[in-house]
Length: 199
Image (cartoon, rainbow, N blue to C red; front, side):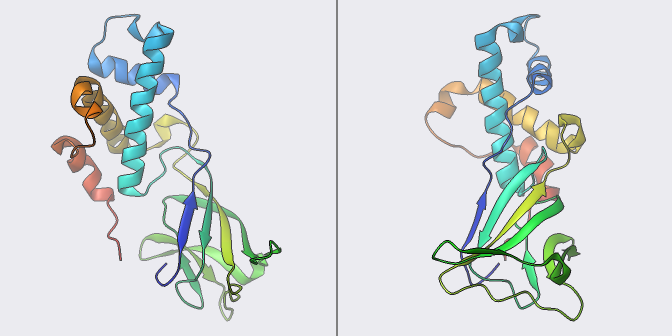
């Protein structure tokens, strides 16, 4: 998405489930019943949320499936738009928005969801081109991104990275309060195969 502004709006990021909190409690070997206390459960859930956010941001992958809104001011070219998140299961709608608020849906007969060099992209269908984006306007795509609706649908190594990072946050609470630090080496190693090269 070179040559234009890009904004990915992830307003539906899910909070940690009871299953995720229980996995963290087990990993930390907390006393039985610790996570059953409402305050303790909420604290562990916040750690899992923070860790999941870091893992998703570092890998550009959505662990749990939800709808996201992508806004761009330019296509990659006349026939493609690379998507900044994986995995993308579906593009619900592609539309063009004008600066005056007018909005027009792009006919699905003109485009399709495809894979380009192993990455999800919106591509013009054979013999077609993506329509020009209005001057001072943008294109928007509603994406369904993520591995699935359940925590267990995400790859095991990414789930482990979230658990290990949340445990690190739990064990290093004083240091974490002073500001961000580098990832633990074990977490970085788990994420490395998923890192995207930024072009």
